[in-house]
Length: 180
Image (cartoon, rainbow, N blue to C red; front, side, top):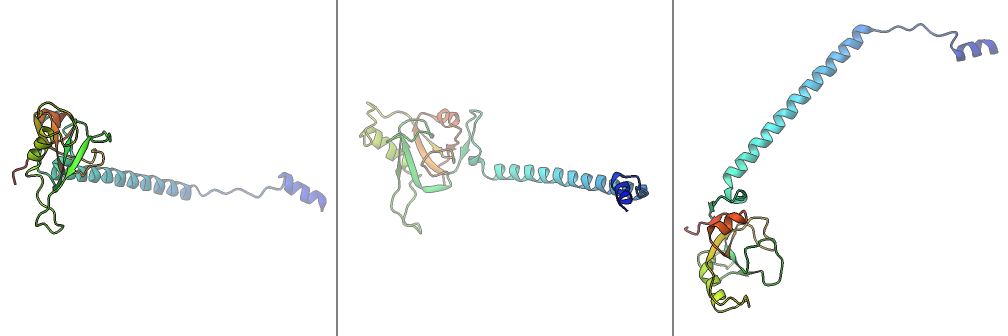
């Protein structure tokens, strides 16, 4: 009896091996079809994602900065808050770099259309040195529409910077189209 167990353990009494090659080939073919379907679905998902991204950019041009330095124009999404900037830098969080402004008005939240008058407010602030920017004269000013890149400021709002339309383009911002 011990010899019999030893022979089985060592393999002298191996069971006959039978393989179903047709079943193996069928399983491989199913696997190939499944991978092909997954590749097709993945390609379709990439195409749909790219199309949705293109639609989003076309619907919201101000969210797509003019990174090439090209001058673009956009209407602000938020007309109830605006900013005066000391320098043409939306990434600085230095004290006094930018100052927010708003006016009382008749909108549902009690604010008014500051975007319409922010250039005059900033020019007065520069002239009267409200923010201690110490400029002997009021520099040329330009109104741009902020993107989400702006530090501690509302994307879609108007910001006034020293400079001209090229200043907005250099920061990747559209020039504010303030005509209603």
